[in-house]
Image (tube, rainbow, N blue to C red):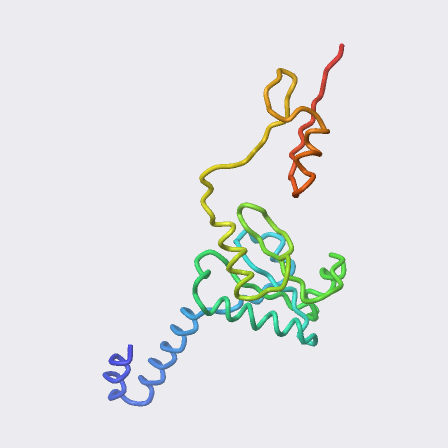
Length: 184
C-alpha cells in the first residue's frame, strides 16, 4: 500500500487525497473496534459477544471499556466475539435500560452459542476473559456423570441420601427431569 501511495503521489494533490482516504478507510475497516450498539438491537442480535452496558461518567465503567478495547485490539478473539458497548446515558437507550431493571454500571454480559446470554461473572481482565474463552473451547475427552437409579434400576446413585453424600464435600450439579404418571 505504501508503494501504491508513492506511485500515485506524483499525480498531484487530488489523487493523493483520494488514495490517503482509501488507506485510512482500509485501516479503520481492518483494525479492531468496539461496536457501539443500541439496547434495542441487542435483543435481536445472535452473534457471540461481550457487551458492556457503559456509563461514561463512572470511572470503573471507563476502565472496563478500556480493557475491552485491549482485548479486541489483540485480535485473539476477533473471529469469535464481537466486543460491543451500549451507552446507558444515551436517549436511545435510557428508557430500555430503565425497563430492564439494570441499575449498576458497568454491567458486562456475554452471549455464546453454548449458554446464550449471561452476566460475565467476576472482574474483567485479560486473564479472566482468556479463562472464560478457554473453558468454552475445551474439548471434553470424558465426563463424570453419575446417574440416579431410575424405575428399572439403571444408575448407581440410589435416592436423595446418596446424592447428599456425594455433595457433602463439593458442589454438585443435578439435572432434574419431570416424571408424569398417567392414571386413568
